[in-house]
Image (cartoon, rainbow, N blue to C red; front, side, top):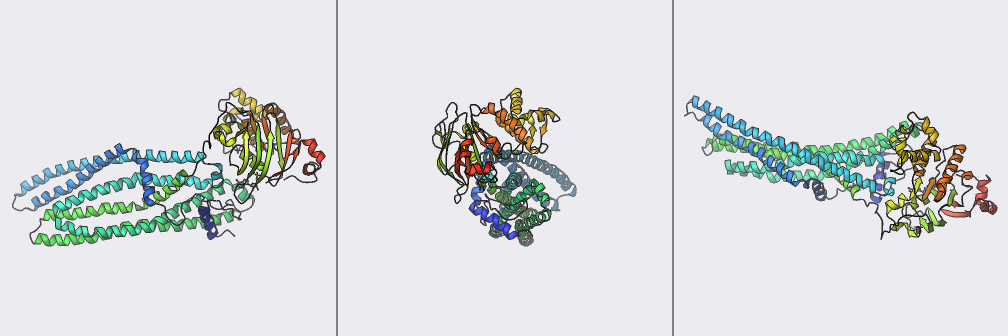
Amino acid sequence: MARSLETLQKQYNTAAVTGKSPVGGGRGPGRGGPMAATNSFAGKPADTKKTLLRIFSYVAKYWKRLVFVFLCMAVSTGAMLAGSYLLRPIINHIADTATPAGERVAYLGRMLLVLSGVYLVGIGGTYLQSRLMIGISRTAIQSIRNDLFTRLERLPLRFHDNNTTGELMSRFTNDVDNIGLMMDQSLMSMLSGIINLVGTLVMMIVTNIWLTLITLVFIPIFIGLSRFIISKSRRYYAAQQAALGAANGYIEESVAGQKVVKVFNHEADCVEEFGALNGDLRGKQMKAMFFGGIMGPIMGNMSQVSYALTAGIGGVLCALGRFDVGGLAIFVNYSRQFARPVNEISQQMATVFSALAGAERVFAIMDREPEAEHDRNAVKPEKLEGHVILDDVSFGYVPEKTVLKHISLYAKPGQKIAFVGSTGAGKTTITNLLNRFYDIDSGKITIDGIDIKDLPRDFLRQNIAMVLQDTHLFTGTVRENIRYGRLDATDEEVEAAARMASADSFIRRLADGYDTVIEGDGANLSQGQRQLLNIARAAISHAPILVLDEATSSVDTRTERHIEEGMDHLMQNRTTFVIAHRLSTVRNANAIMVLENGEIVERGDHDDLLAMQGRYYELYTGKSELT
Ligand SMILES: Nc1ncnc2c1ncn2[C@@H]1O[C@H](COP(=O)(O)OP(=O)(O)O)[C@@H](O)[C@H]1O
Ligand SMILES: [Mg+2]
């Protein structure tokens, strides 16, 4: 049985409020359920005016081009209005039976030529305005995407830990696309609508002031109605975009975790859970589209009423001889045209609402606090030696739960410090703190006597080479992936690093050797081979501090021994932190820290610890299981 929709819903709504990812107890790919930690939708739409202004700030940069667009619009609208007005003398002249028929036809011919000239100018204006506007909007969307990506790259790891990839992808695709659609279509429609409205009004007043007044009576009704519908539909559009993000997040997790889903036979559950999300999305889309869509028809009907009224009263005026037939013909035409921009603008509402909802979600990420380059007053020494001190360090990922308690240690260049302990003891967490993936809650970490908070972040990370517990390879050749560790490394250095990591021989056996393209996070390599490439990537770096987090957990013992020999050379003048699964690999460490529940319970070298006959002794002699 799948989690009910309400549970899913509740999860991501709570997440929106607390900013934490809900960790659901359910199975399936979306263990955490659809997360929307940065979701701005919590029932209440954000400040519409502010969001709109912010979107426009992206196009305002091109104000010169916008002015030109505006001129083009004025020209095309002017041409249209003039064209309509020309019908008045034409109709009056044709209807004038006093003039001979031949003369009337000749007049009509001349006027048709003039009319086509006027309309051609109008078409030219419309063409230019569309082309220019698309240029402006696409450039603006380019900068929005850029800003979003830049911010995403600079956000702390905590943010990425708490958001699903699919949800974030949804912001890049759907949400940004919606903003683009609004800029392409709605912005132009609205601008030209306003010009149209003003122009037509002027022409109406010129034609007949009394009939104009009748049309104007309807304006407050139009405005009132649209206000009501706008206020209703805004929230549904925001809900729609959030539901879309949730569904996308679920799809992404299912695709990424498809192997696991199949292993546990959870396909049917997945389908059911997705069905719930999909149904929710449909419901919200229907509501959003309904409210976005009814505006046009309602306005259309209202304008029909106003049209009929002006036509009737105008007809009476004509019969009384107070108004000319040509004038009436163009007036009803104008009153139609007057309703058109109102309709057009209201039809754009659906697009505008989607764009607003999308923009809120995009800006919510842009407004996230990025990782500061450095805090306080930064110092940047020439180079670091690698004296690492942890002084009474405590840390928890969430305030309620301390993961590391009072950790103190000192590591010198050339030393190898090992962490052992059961899974979840906090080994990886220590390495996360060293390069400031997360910041410590209390205590102090220094390198060469400098608090790491005073070092520029990029400089700090440059000085720590890491082999992370979970590997990641980028699409590209083997050579490029190793060179990722130091971009200016020569081909010889790449191969030397690969030899050190015992990766050289298997790389040479690949189809294209070092130029073999790795795809899909190394799907064409074994887990162990991926680890070897990761080690090579770290080995190529000149960083004085080296961190290996279970770097050889999927490698056989013989290869591991080889790597160790290779690395011994590499470790000589560096500070090395090793987390290892097999105790045999840490035997030669200068100091071994035994971690338990976030505390160092024993420390010393291999012989000391054995002599102590404590926890390490138990682990080593097999009296107690590791992991
Ligand atoms: N990103 C995270 N957010 C919250 N808690 C975490 C996170 N990563 C690890 N933890 C928790 O911190 C504890 C220590 O984890 P970790 O340092 O990865 O253990 P290990 O010793 O196996 O490397 C675990 O209880 C784990 O649940
Ligand atoms: Mg770990």
